[in-house]
Amino acid sequence: MNTQEFEATLKAGNYDEINTISKAVGYQMGEHQHTFDACALITAGQIDIVVAGESTSYKVGDIFRLSAGTVHTEDASPFGVTYIVGRRNQVK
Image 1 (tube, one colour):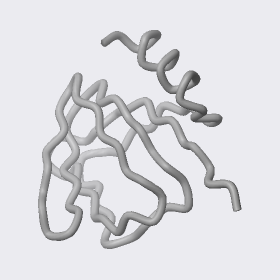
Image 2 (cartoon, helix red, strand yellow; image 1 turned 90 degrees about the horizontal axis):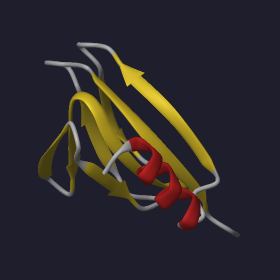
Image 3 (cartoon, rainbow, N blue to C red; image 1 turned 135 degrees about the vertical axis):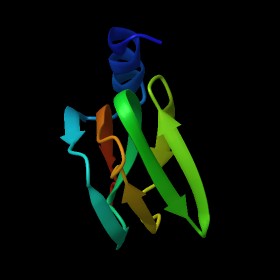
C-alpha cells in the first residue's frame, strides 16, 4: 500500500488527524496509553510495540493499530522510525 492509499484509508475510517512522525535512533517510551485510536504505516526504520507482554516488530510497509486506552511501550532505539499515523478521537 502506498502512502496516498493509506491516507485515503485513514480518512475513510474517520481518522481525523493524519501526521508523519519521526523518532530518532535511541527512542524509547515506557508504558503509556493514548486517548485516541491510532493506525500507522511504517515508512522507514522499525518500531517494537509491546502490548500485554507481547512484543511485535513493525518494519517498512507494516501497519500497526492501537485502540484508545491500550497500555503499551514503544522502542525504536536500534534504527529509529518514521511513520504516517492517523488518530481517531473517541466520542464521550
